[in-house]
Structures are given as structure tokens and as C-alpha cells.
Image 1 (cartoon, rainbow, N blue to C red):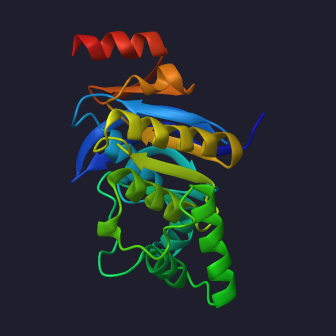
Image 2 (cartoon, rainbow, N blue to C red; image 1 turned 45 degrees about the horizontal axis):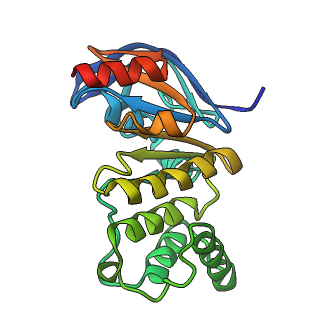
Image 3 (tube, one colour; image 1 turned 90 degrees about the vertical axis):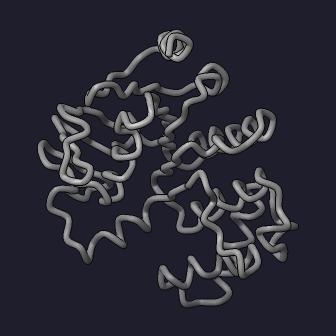
Length: 234
């Protein structure tokens, strides 16, 4: 079987000192595409934050990329996060610099000091997401779909072992969203695991993956058919 990247056993997760998830037991492995679904406030974002040590794990056993999340030291957190690629719905690109300089900023921040290595990594990730001719552009000159591709490229810069995405297609039209999902599915097959929160249950019907349903502080794996039916009933 493929490598286990995340191993949670009987985990409770807190948000602002209030328990939002409990008795959570899940594993995520290399090559998986995992969809997180559920109503707003059901704990999807808190689960994602717990993976990069930004939400408290108050009970159980939680291991991410061989880090014990309950015992992780503050000084270790940046090293954990370098092994994760995080994709936000609202892009969070720096508006005062070009695409290439946005990506170079990330590499400098993660202590990649060799300029030629930074240039090579930037060229490689831009080519991978189909944006190799957009490096000189400013963020405001790009469409929403193009900006999201740059965000994905940014997430891939440090060759992460897991990609975390919070509603990565939420602000995009249907066609552009499908293009982004095609890319995320490709990443899950070729590079690493992708874990994404979404309200769009069309994606699991098109791009095969596991579906985790968040509801009333619990998380359960459900079939794609159940996910679609549940969504239609909400």
C-alpha cells in the first residue's frame, strides 16, 4: 500500500477553544484525492488547519508527515508547512509584484538561497500548471482561473507531500473550475495527495476520490452517490 501521510485516531479538534470535531479517525495516503463536504461551520476548515498545526488537536493521536501534531514544537511548524502545499480560495497573491517575483518571494522565505535553483523551480512549476508564459504578468492582469493556477504553482514550489485546498473552485465559473479540478486530479495521481474542501459535489462524479462528510462534530466517509443525494437535500 502507498505511504500514509496523515494518521488521525480518535482526534478532537478545537476552534477558539470550542470543540468542533471529535472521535475523528482517518488516514490519508499518497496518490489520494480526498473531498471534504458539509455545511458551513461543520469543521472542514478546522480539519485542514489542524493538518498544518493552526488548529488545536485536543485529544487522540494525530500524525502528519511523521510530525506528532499534539506535541509539535513551535520552531518545527515552519518545517512541517514547507512539506505541505496550501491553496486558498481568495488566492492571497502579492499584488505589488509579478508572478515570478511572487514565487521567488516564497522560495526566499523558505531559505532557498541559490538564485539559479529558485529560477529553475519557478520555471518548472509554471510549466506544470500551463502558465510558463505568464511569469512577467502582474496578478491583476490575470483571470481568476489563471490566478488560481499560479496559486497551485506556488503550492508546488517546495515539492510538497500533501496539497490542502479550501474551496479552490469556489470563486470560478464552471468551465474554469473544471480546468482547475483537472489539474488538481493530475497532481494527486502524479505527485502527492490532494485534500480539498468543496460544496460542489459534481467534482467527485467526474474526478474519482474519497468523500468525507462533516456533520454535527463527526466525520464519516460516504459514497459519491450519498454525497450527491445529501447535497440535493440540503
